[in-house]
Image (cartoon, rainbow, N blue to C red; front, side, top):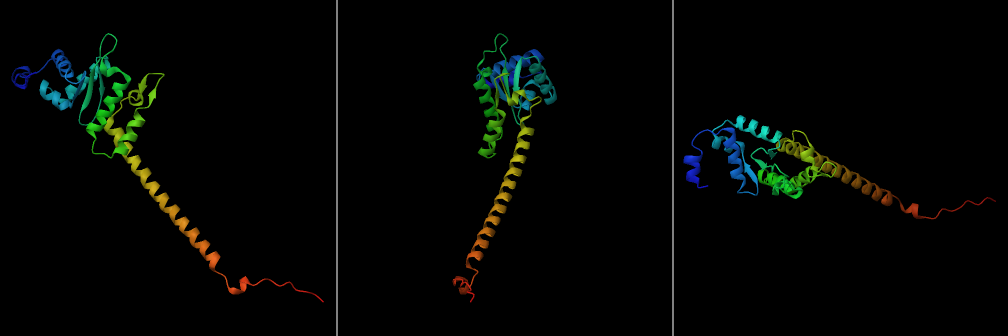
Length: 199
């Protein structure tokens, strides 16, 4: 849609629930059936409060009209096909890609090893229910789980550094002790022991 038309005509008055959903559908056409925008942007477009947008999206998700992956700065919203859910974003690979895209786009400043380990953990697949770990977790929140992950990762790294330092000290102590035991003797110690003879 032409930006001028979008700003001047299309978004010139508050949306109702129906036209808000139509707007989601229009936006999804530009990104493989997905809408990747912050709630505050939708609030501005629809002339709603952010809280009203959040409640509306949660209501749509509860009724399986959309699927959401939440982040601190933006959400990924997937429009669900009422028939067989055969849209691109409902496949296993696409859902994993959505999750990776959200983490990398929102938290790209975090070190790659932390992001990769976090992603690998939450993309654990359960064939029994056909869901990833983040989909199986009730009220999954990206920002909270990632903050918890970083905190634990830092604690683990600090413990590892302390353990490594402790092991190095022990190794140095053993080496020093070994050196003392092999060098702390006199010339007399090298003399053969003479057996005493009794007459």
